[in-house]
Image (cartoon, rainbow over all chains, first blue to last red):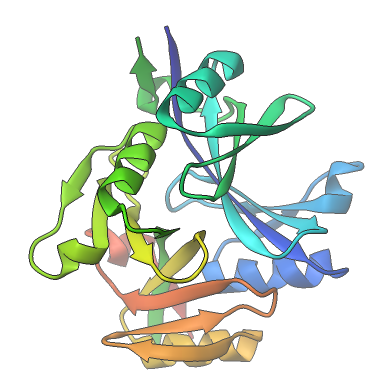
Length: 126
Length: 126
């Protein structure tokens, strides 16, 4: 038995100007931007969502710009298998997370649990 | 002076099977699907998000599948102008809402306020 929930979304931005991309989305959504430390900060800027408790980041990417959803879980392998049974497919494993593709075509990621209220809000899967 | 906030997101799905698309995303996110009445129900299925209070829908579309964000506001014209000043551009007006494109390339929509807690959570813009 494991649990999962929507973690939030990543705003994938193609182009060299991560700080400019983050500044736009921070202003558009009314969410403060927070620089991340080390190498993570070279590719990601966090947007602080006090409105809904979502994990939101602006990411610099090489592929075309898009928005992708993240699902957080306490058991990545079990969650990936559950999503495969629903029709999704594995695309690539990157460090601790899996990139998947929905049967409707969108890419999304299965990541480790991180929300402080994960246990209270996540769905329990048999 | 007006207000706005992230409303949620729409999962745009290309293909003829709206109900199948909604079934996948309902199962993946652990959110019950609710059929919408009338012609709206021919293109949209609502996903009920008790976890974060987001407005989430699965939409049948003719363009490639993607996820797009919605920003809700109490003054659509003022919000569109604010976003234009940040670098976004107007794409098309559809009924009450505006489709816009971010300077980073993603499409998003500016829609009328609908969240019950809009006044408490929205950002006030001068």
